Image (tube, rainbow, N blue to C red; front, top):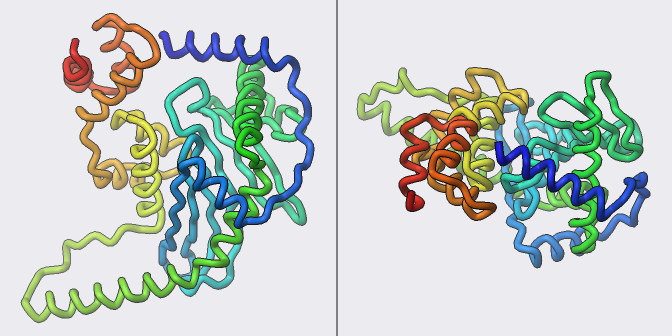
Length: 305
């Protein structure tokens, strides 16, 4: 597949330009207001939400741009008893590193940084040592190259991972009370609507209230679709790699309002923007991405083939 060839060539170019990777050194943690200024100046969109499920509620913040930064904390419905889940970083666009993620989590009094690939390989972000035995040398190299690329991109705009982690924690401190009030208002309005429906004799027995896992899976699915095109199968696989259950994935895929023909069209155009494809090659590439034969045919026809 051309995608694999592109990833391989990109890796060779990076090796030639950067040489051997060096261990990451601790950098100065920037003031949160400075981090926010840099993110906004570089066209990152910052969003926050509090998914209210009582004692198992989840507060999260994300910044989406060239990369997707997603930070979450467990908490109670009133925003108290907060416990950091951590920060996840990944490439926002389809490319050589869309199978790689960086996880940053709190470990005692320090932060733990792990790079992992969808094939199961994991390495320590700081010293680049493998963390499991099933890491192929090519996967280790792939993760090391991603680290170099990520650090280079962040340095270019004056940011570092620790500053971003610190910023998200600060952002939740500043805004979580607003989300709590918004949730209370939303619940009150829903209760009023339910009372009106009951008075009118409506049958509410078939209403499905999503679980916390289903809500999070749907949110993740919509975030992915905002960043890049996915087939239904590709989106399901991506959510599965995040650890969501089959029921949560099914709920997310059914309720994310994706037009899979449109997704195939966007994917086809993105490949043509990278390099030339024959019609059959483009169809094969879309099939490889998990689109159906009909969706692939629609996609290549929609871009002019």
